[in-house]
Image (cartoon, rainbow, N blue to C red; front, side, top):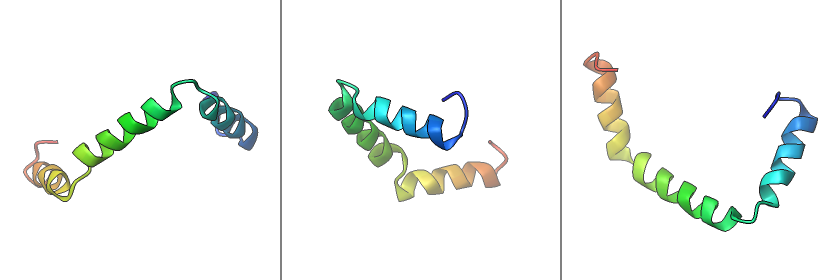
Length: 54
């Protein structure tokens, strides 16, 4: 997005909702969230922070 004005946000939401591959994009996003944002992944990231690895 060019900026975070309400008009720009609305324009980009409309653009996304009209995207021809919206269903595939949503499926890919869900798979990413289910894979990367589990409790186990959060613990792993926290451990890296505590150990100074990040």
